[in-house]
Image (tube, rainbow, N blue to C red; front, top):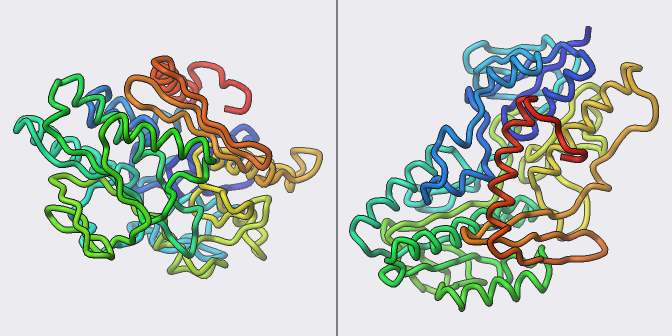
Length: 388
């Protein structure tokens, strides 16, 4: 039985382990966290609709449900023939290696004065605590923003910022204190969210005006301070609490290794997710560079497609499948159910169309239901829907 090691316990890593086990491979998953964190539903932690336990699945439970081995350790380096762990040192005991370590974040000056909801989960918990403190005071200034990476334009996380912004706005309105808070959005690109198309941009602008949310776009971020955000033209956005999602950057373990990588530190892969010129190593999810149209973006559903394809392609090499290798290229699209607390919108874009469908009230509950489905289906307690 072939031994396959999966590095990373995020969306791509967990999906890789689950689907590799369907071919009865000997699978070991290595992660520095002992839980799988479901980022898409963590937006509700600050607004008290979810707590930490609601948005995690212990990896030991997933390992038990699907039959893979779990090792908790931190990956320090990944080479084309081995990897190095913090506790266990260098290892090369695998027939295939799947790199699913995700990405790190660009380091802006003063980033320590901000909180991200797409980084270490502890930051979301700290943000929630700080928001509680301001709510107890009864007033405050809140800033929400995200950044870009010129070396990897697809490594941007904007959707969660919009979701948190709208959810916090609705939360404050429910508490009847919204008028005492100033909410501001900021981003360095002139048209943040343009990947979703012109209709999405118009709707976002309309929502900002309707909800009295200030907006600063098209100006680079100079630095963050304890009381705000400084932009390149000297403008300072005053803020008592800043949520900021920095653009993605290559993972340190990849940057320190010898896998072929882009200038930003993302692994270069073939459309089959096999690492370029490395026969038995694959990279999936945020760890790898993407080919595709200018508007392409790294998203969870694409990471899962890559993971499933990788399992199939390895099985194909081992004679357990028949047919042609599968690629992620045909699956590049943007799909996002954007929650707003009291509703939502379904955003979709591919090469042929871009649309945003408003879903008042029902959109919020659709995402809530998806969160329940996602946890139960990952644990194998309910059947998975085709393509999900």
